[in-house]
Image (cartoon, rainbow, N blue to C red):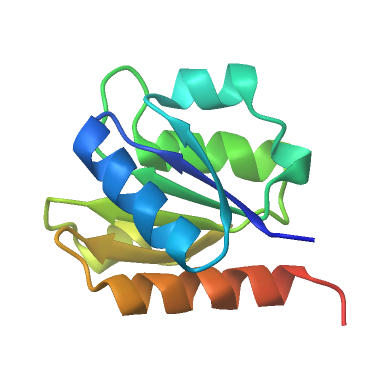
Length: 123
C-alpha cells in the first residue's frame, strides 16, 4: 500500500513543489491550502505523515500539529518554515517529527518523511 502524505501550505508554489518531490519518491500526496481545508476534507486516519507550514493565517502549523496530535496521536507531523524559530519552540512538542527551514534540502526532507512513516508502521 502506497503511503499517503498530506501537505498544508498557503503558498501554491510550495504545494506544487512538495507534490512533485513526494510523488517522485513514490508517495500519494494530498494538498491543502489551509489547516481548515485539511481538517474538513482529509481522512487523517488514512494519512501516514503530515507536512505543514508553520506561518499561515487563522491557524498556524503549531496549532494544527496540536489538534492533529489530539485526534491522531500516532500521526507524525513535519513542520516547514521560512522563519527562524528557537528550537525550544518546537522541541518536545508531541507528534512533531522534525522541522525544516525553507529552502530545505529535498533529500533530508524525504529521509525525514520515510523515517516518520517507518516509525508509524507496525513491525
